[in-house]
Structures are given as C-alpha cells and as structure tokens.
Length: 282
Length: 300
Image 1 (cartoon, rainbow over the protein chains, first blue to last red):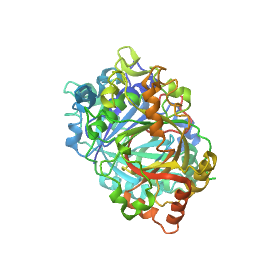
Image 2: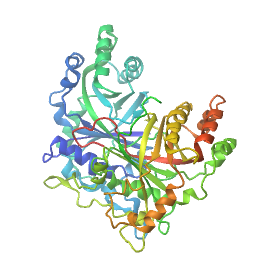
Image 3: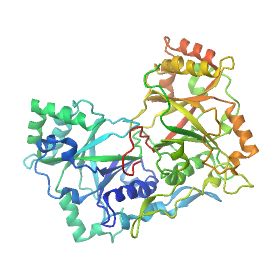
Image 4: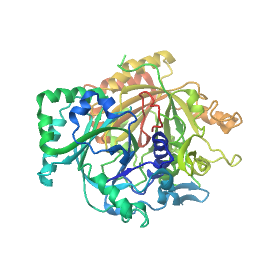
C-alpha cells in the first residue's frame, strides 16, 4: 500500500485548539471522502508538553532534539491508498451525494473542502513513508495514549542497516513494553508525492517552502508510533527498561537524535488493509 | 452477571433507514449515506461515537450452511425490505442527543474558526424513504437502545464481519425474567464464542418514542398516526439485538458450532426467544466510539 504523511502548521489566525476543531471537523469531513481512500488518521500534538506527560523520563530518553521542533508542525495526516496512482487521482469530485436526480458528484471533495488557505500556514510537508508494522494496532472504544518517537539515523550507519536494525532488534525490544497495543515504524522516503497532488503555485514549491520542508526533514528519519491505554504504562515500562540498558544502548547505537511527542489521534477512516470491497466503504 | 455488564452509561440510538428507492440502488445509498451525509453528521455536537451499518450484498443464509436452520428461527419475512442501513450513535445523555444539531464552529475561514455556513442534513429526503406530503422529512425508526458490553470491541486495521442477531422475547416470559435471562445466561454463553473481536448486547427501549422525543418537533412525521403505526409494527418484530464482530462468516460458523457451546446456546434461545435471526452488515466507522472521559477539546 501507499502510506503518505502530511505535516501541517496551523494558520496564524487559529489557536492550536481552533486548528484541531477545523482540521478534525470540516477538513476531515471532506478528506474522508477522497476517492478510494483506504485509511486516514489525523494526529494533533497534545496540549500538554511531553515533559509533563512523561515526567523525568522525558529528559532521560531525549537526545539532541531540534530547537523549535514544535514550531514546525501542529499535526499530521496519515493517508493510506492502494497505490501512487489511486492517491494522485483521489482529489476528484466524489460521486457520493444524494440529490433530486439520484446520486450526484460533489466537486468540493476535489478541493478537500477548499479550506486549506485558512487552515494551514503554507503547504503541508507531504511525503511517502515505508512502514514496518511490528505490532498491529487494535483500537478499543476509548481514546488511547499515542506516543510518537522521532529519531535521526547515526551518521556512520548505512541507511539499509539503520532500517534493518530498527525493524529488527529495536522493534523486538520495544514490543516487550507491557501494555503496548500497537507499534509501527515509518521511514521517510524521497519519493515526490507533492508535485501532482498540490497546485503548481502552492507555497511548498517556492524556494522558501522547499527550504522549510528540508529543515523539517532534517529533524528525523524514522518516526515510530506507539499506542498504550495510558501514559504511565509507557513510563513504567520504559523506566524498567532503563535499568536493563538494552533499549538505551540500542538507541545510542542507532539514533543521532531522538525525541517524543504525545498526539491525539482521530481515526478519520479506519484503515482497512484487507482487499477493498467492491462498493463504497469507509 | 457478566463482568462489565451493567447500567447503560450512554445514550445510544439505532436509526433504521430505508433508502429512497426511487432514486438510489442499495449501493448508491451506501455512497450517499457514508459519503456526503456522514460528512455533515459526523460533526453533530458532542457526538461520542458513530457507525453506519448497511446490510451486506451477499445473502447470509447459504454461508451459514447447516447451522442456519438451527440458529435462525421465525425470521420475519421481508425484514431487509424495511431498511437498508442503521446508523448507531452514542451521546452522553438524552439532552446532548437532542441538542446535537446545535451549530458549532468547525471550519477555518477568513477571520478564523467559524460555523460552517454550508453544513446541512438537507440531503435526507433524497437519501432516505421520502414523504411526498412532507418534502423536508423522511421515514425512519430512531430507537433508543439500552446497551450492555459483553466483550469490549477492539477493531483491527482490516474490515471485520459484523453479524447482528435480532431477537424477540418469548411471550411466556415476563419482561424482567426475559432481560435477566438474556443478561445473565445467554450473554455469558455468547461471550464464549471463539474469535470474537467484540460483542454488544442491546435491548430496545420499551419507550419507542425515547429517541424521537425533543429531537424532532411535535408535528413531525414521527408523531403522526402513520409514524406511530409503522414504528409499532417494526418494534413488534424484535426486542433486542446483539452485535458480533468476527473475522469471517466461516469463522463464526465454526466457533458457534463448538460442541460444548452449541447445544447450550440453542437451548437458551428456545427458552428466551420467540424469534431469532442474523443479519450481516458492513460497518462503516464514522466516529470511533470513545467511552472514556471526553477531552476538553474538539475530538472525534
């Protein structure tokens, strides 16, 4: 499948909570109707700082976080499609509106609601990731604690080995954390998924837009999603792992920098990784 | 008692809806309901969970095989002609349900966060069973359900099969004996069916107007003689429904046929139910239910 992330910064007229309401509310309502979309999750940075959520553990497991990291994004969408072709053709009118002549096209879906200029500051930083599902997530009927780890590769470590070790030894260690409900590693790729998805005049294609995006990309190479029922499960499990040193030594070996954020996850379209039904389904 | 069973902590509504058959096929209705309609309804104020269940295109009976005749008893003829889909919605209270249509700012526009001026549920009469003399309304069976969690639902990232077991009370049992029998005997047995991703028991509120009251105006079709009559007739068919989430119909057939379980479930069904039958539905998840504390910010 094709998994695409789009990191966004809120429009300056919106507070962080205003942005939540507008992204989760109106924007996602159109985004979930993109043609042939197979999954759509929105992650909005939690209001509480990670140092408050994780306590003293936060500073013990964070190294060389990029300054001003939180100024670079407020949230990101995760889109799942069957292929690059279906992703690029998703922004077309949706034949999903009942009207006086039966089912009609809704052109507003092609613009994902058309609210981008007032929702975002600049273009999303949009890119494809290759994922490794170490522990498939099963979501209960309550809000989970979702933690995200951003890590950069040690410069002396070839990319192939980095991915292999993260998906292998490191994932196996992380998967032992008690209470873990899901574990997915995502590696950013250089594949261009912006050119035929956004208008040519979009801010993301200006010199400044490209520079900002590259600056953001410099802040991480692998992003790992972890789901727990509660934050204290991660804190307790990770503290226990500190004493065993395995995770610490692995992180020193693999990561030049590493930091964490809690996000509030909205399941806009529950990902369906099984073959698509031959009827409209979300 | 089954662990976790108890008083309903949410206001849950099933809304059985027949498509506008003059305008839409069943598959077109799917797209119209899950697409445009839910684009608006998922923004209902303070909604805590929302799924749309649409009966599956393939008939279930042949896939149940020999089990069909043992676990399906007196299915009402033409039951699926009465509806195409039923949304289920969760709210914190009857009051939040009746106030769900209150506009709230969810759209970024010039000047910041605004109420969406284009928000509408006006597609209803084109999507659902229309009323020629009431052009802004449609027929529906909105019913308040009293919910009991038998096995908490956990959804993986692949489409599950959802089976809904509709049942009608055996008239030889009083209401209380029936409810206690289903809660304390049948539900724990059902929970033992292997491979369940979730099992939710729902009793239809005997107050058939509970979901309509204060939600629709007093002069709405729901309160017309035809509205009452159709609701009475529909509710006479069933008293509750159990939602079962499984990997496949085949997996359900195998698990339901387990020799240590099958005879006991059948015996309980003969004792408790005058009728019991299954409908496979495709569950579209519109708002993932959050049964935990509501966050202090906009959340779906």
